[in-house]
Amino acid sequence: MIAQQLRIAMLSVHSCPIGQLGGRDTGGMNVYIRELAAALGRRGHLVDVYTRAHDPRDAELEYLAPGARLIHIRAGAVEEMGKLTQYNHLREFHDNLEKFRFGDGASYDLVHSHYWLSGEVGLRLAQEWRVPQIFAFHTIGAAKDELDLGENEPAIRLITEKEVATGCQHITAGTAAEKDAILRHHGCDGANISVVPCGVNPALFKPVDKRQARTALGFSDEPLVLFVGRLDKLKGIDRLIEAISLIEAPACRLAIIGGDEYSKPALERLKDLAARLNISGRVEFIRAVPQPKLPLYYSSADVVAVPSYSETFGMVALEAVSCGTPVVSTDVGAARIIIKEGLSGSVVPGNEPSVLARALAPWLENRDMDRMKLHGSVAGFGWDAVAGRMEHVYRNVLSKTPVGVK
Ligand SMILES: CC(=O)N[C@H]1[C@@H](O[C@@H]2[C@H](O)[C@H](OP(=O)(O)O)[C@@H](O)[C@H](O)[C@H]2O)O[C@H](CO)[C@@H](O)[C@@H]1O
Ligand SMILES: O=c1ccn([C@@H]2O[C@H](COP(=O)(O)OP(=O)(O)O)[C@@H](O)[C@H]2O)c(=O)[nH]1
Image (cartoon, rainbow, N blue to C red):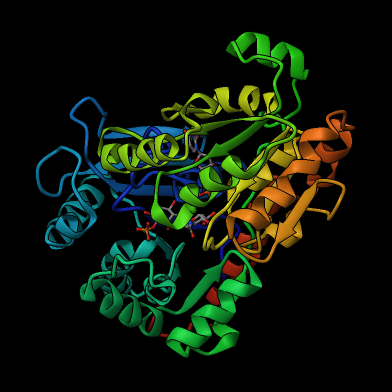
């Protein structure tokens, strides 16, 4: 008998759902966990999100929303830490999580773990608690390696991902393409993988008058291309800068949002590239911007570029369209689902600079859009709908869980 109210332990070891976004390791996954947990809480469930304590200013426990708690667990020094180093502290994370749980008296129906580090902790907890573990990759290490971008993923990630993929009870993927990639790399049973898309908050990501937005941010009236995201090689920002250098008419500017103190080498590389291409004066590097301010930036832009080599979903494209701004994206993640060709942007086969340049140019000329129409085109992606689909997955998994596992 499955209770109406589910008690969910969500694991987000390596990255805090309320951390500053756009940093080295803080992106869509953080937003996903924060919003999903809050939406499940609104549906009457109890969600505890466990993350590694990384900032001494953070309280041990805080509420993301009614029914959704965020708990910082000590594992290693309370400071920022590389992902690989965090692997060495997973046992401590597990033990301190259990210490917290005993003190608090919490118990759970299921574990939903995010990213391989959490998946590793989830395997142990699920076994000890005799509940199912549902796992989300967010990015598949083996798929990243396949891209051959000159930075191989550590062997321990690849091994752990396989262990978790085959040892968990169920997997959630953001798109059907991610599900296919999981099947290809890890050969799990397709029946044990559900596709649940990411979402967007339409009350936050809505169109602002372009002129007002530009005035507020101090942008000129020149055609503007915007990039938003982590300064990761996978994002193809270098390709976008090259594309901008190829666009002669209309003359346009590129604003790049993202990056923290750990992204300095990437930032320097991109600045050097812009200098070598003689377009430094046309490229503005804006560091990470808090999410509540992003609608102003999206609304200022004529077009948002997503030049990624790969995305499992790609929430920036969804947020941009929700703000009424067209998106030119490579054919990655949910791009083909989010972007209506010719109406809300265009999808290109790859990030070859000349291809990107050709795709971007028309959106810089056609500058008067029915932005509310674009906003409405992604109305089905609200977080409550995502939480509803996730609840369905949870209940299905619980109904199939053999006696003795739960
Ligand atoms: C590039 C990509 O596929 N991003 C996904 C993903 O986001 C991040 C990614 O998983 C990072 O992994 P990596 O160590 O391999 O760089 C994590 O560190 C970040 O925390 C993730 O935010 O997940 C997003 C949500 O599912 C998805 O929209 C995005 O396309
Ligand atoms: O300066 C920034 C850069 C990014 N983001 C947020 O980070 C997320 C990026 O998610 P996406 O899925 O596009 O990429 P990821 O970083 O997960 O690979 C989006 O929700 C953005 O709104 C942000 O708030 N501020």
